[in-house]
Image (cartoon, rainbow, N blue to C red; front, side):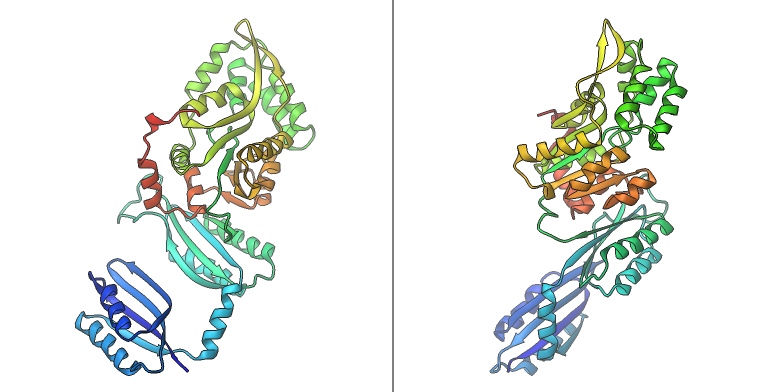
Length: 417
């Protein structure tokens, strides 16, 4: 029976190392069963699992590898693997694979310790750990710094709800975000991203801004509170709030639009998504006036929101057409997916309110962004620590690839399609 050897080489990274090591293996006609290599701060760690033919001098090959490594100031360790151990390793490839994404302003050992403890407690095995965020300078952290580490884990998960709950407890205790998703073919094959607008793409609730200018801010807030307590539904509360805006001059809308603050990371996210060929949409319970403004500024492909009725330069207090509530958002998401001829698993939905839950629940990746507690608990994924562009990490895109994609197209080149 052929020998199976695990070759482990480590030391200072140098040009030509991999070429030299594989040349030795080639000279002995071995079969490569697995190979992996990583470099951290100019230090190389390389592992090669090989099958050595029966007529090969495995001792001579091992010595050649050790001599090669020693001559370059490196360490080489060669371990024999039993056929039974190898068979178990092969069988493990059929197990489900999951991705855990840790998002924070900075990564600490305590965070990694607690996350990996949860993984171990649930009987999962870590196959790989990758840093997706850029290198962090020493000293004080830059403003709005981003840090992300991705864990690839494998195994039979007995209770996914309990596992997710344990991760959420760690996230809450450490003030970080932890996303957990199955590693399927859809993860890197999303094609459409739909966003809520107010408190998601922008850091404001537009109707509250308009109400303040109309002098009815307290009344509108009181209706909003009743809706949040479930005393009235979204459509009823929305019509009541809009009615209070009657008589507001149209110029006030323009003023509010010019003062809108775009959410952290939104521009980078959408620029990158467009470059990668994604379609984007706003599905909002707010107003089309502001959705069109964002469409022009950010380059959004589709918008669906509520049409505020204006006559003779004044808000009439009415809405034209059906109200975009939670059920309507979910319906629009399905329609957009159908128009793009894609599966719902290829859709990402992002929102912060209870009326976003219907669309978050049917999208392949539903993300509660800086959401209310009830929404955060109900959604599959949540992001509260970083900006909207943290979504790119959930797609497995490192900063290096993000920057390459966004640099291909400048913001001035972007406009509605």
